[in-house]
Length: 181
Image (tube, rainbow, N blue to C red):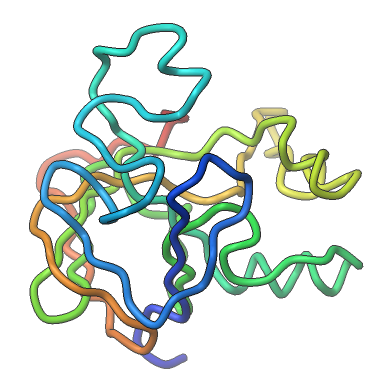
């Protein structure tokens, strides 16, 4: 397998389900993707703003693997980079296996820290019926497995483009499994 890389980048200034693929995005430290509706130091997702508008934004950048997209396409779903609302579509990296606190270096300067899992919501089924179930699974012990990507915060800003390599730095100490954020 080749080294992990960014396959596609996407953003959208409006609060819509899907994001628009771009030639590049700019990450802003402590905020997220420049010009994206979810950019901000405090929560920007509408449901979370309604609960507590002062809560920190742990969902500044959304990442999904192209491998999940390919699996969904093979199952008959109409998806592609940006369609599931992600800012970064990655290749060659098992995002769901990373522990909380993992740092990903992207492009020449950008660094993001994985904060947790995206919790699939009703918007998936509004896009296409059955999509929510397709991104959920069950472990042998019955625990729910969320496969709709991971969320991150921006540590260091910079431009990110398709083709950029991803350098993974695992956190020290005991690792904590990703939880929904």
